[in-house]
Length: 261
Image (cartoon, rainbow, N blue to C red):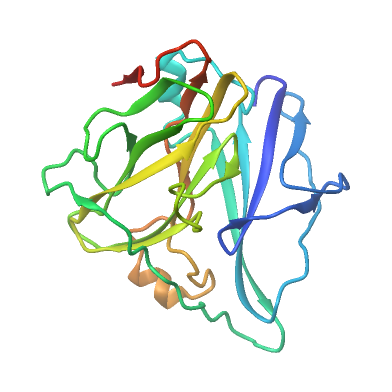
């Protein structure tokens, strides 16, 4: 980076956000590092104890975590950007090979968006199901429930497997208020495009809060399995973020005013 930069570090263990030690700063969910222009640095991290078996851990670096402008150009600039990640397979116990645990795929309500939907092999957060307009920001009322849609799609030529993780202010949250799950796993057939209804409880604190959804492809795949990697060459093994949606909380605003483009 050419300028002084602050980065937010978070981690998901088995697709659940966890507190962990990072750079001797103690066990926390959020860690912040500051880097000077063109600086290169190494940081140590330590995870909590895990049960025997195979696990996925992914470390995320979020750029510009304190940027909360509602400017549309900034919002668009966050689409599949300003985030880096690295995933590792962890084997605990006596096993010598990574063995993916059984995954329960999402069985909640979805809508089919049809083959002509604009999205292709990716994710788009919108106000309404299967909408072509990206949700950029919205004026919301504190302590109310806010509905939105997570649209996901496979390429027309190949199927995909993906985990979807919603974050509010970079903390993992459930897909809906009535669900315990804060991650959803999907297996989509080639060309399949669906919309997943979601909602979130708006914080009480006024100001701009950040809603972001992580697209994590190929959950629990063996990074060292060259045969599997060759079969799934079409699906990138690294994560991408949705557009960061600015939720502008003001107690005197009428709920529902949003900016979508």
